[in-house]
Image (cartoon, rainbow, N blue to C red):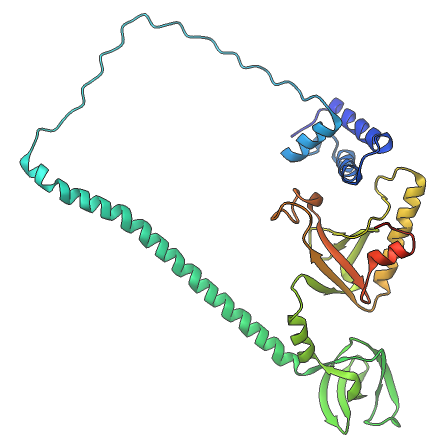
Length: 336
């Protein structure tokens, strides 16, 4: 819904006043900040949903523009007499027609029942075949992944030497960190020949784990938990991140960091910048990163939409097994 220039300026002024002097709660502050950012970016071309429009007018107490009343002219009463209704045309009674009436009624009832039944059975057949195809395809993909995983190993030590031969007396070609994937080529007396970024060499088998066994363990973990790389995460502020390839940002739950987009004062802005920089450092220096999606405290089915948390999803981010929220709280950069 478009806004006039005067109404846009009025809304922006009241939003700034409520953020600075209105003492809003956390939800209202987040809502006012988001609305102010939209009006600053788009001006009179700002588009809001009906729910956002009603909530904005309710919280700011802005009078809505009056709609013009519809005018209608009453037609003059008819003075002429109404026309005489026509009598319906009736077929003359026929004994043969009366005899065949039950047969016609039966055929009509059969058509009304059979056609919907045929359509329903056809739809159920299509759904069943599609489910069987997708299920068999998923099984084939998982089986292929398991077969490929059997040829790879994962480094389990923090810094493991890769040597030119199967013994501690052979030269060190390089060191591989925990979690590195290598290809298995051969095995001999407790040593495994592998192919890695350092080339083809040998590593102690005690510091290697089969990728197939780790994959089987991961399949038992809830599908709401993901392993991420640091390059896939974009830190927006101290408690919000974006994931590469996903349109919805993720609000990290369990803690609240100072605002950076609409702070109440310079001190809050500085604190918000420190929290953002600290979260960036935690992600960049982490050896393992896991994101667990949790359902937002909104109406079921609205997660990830504009009707819940401004289109953001909710989650818990862990670096090296520790919740980043607890780390920021312990360092005085956030509150529970």
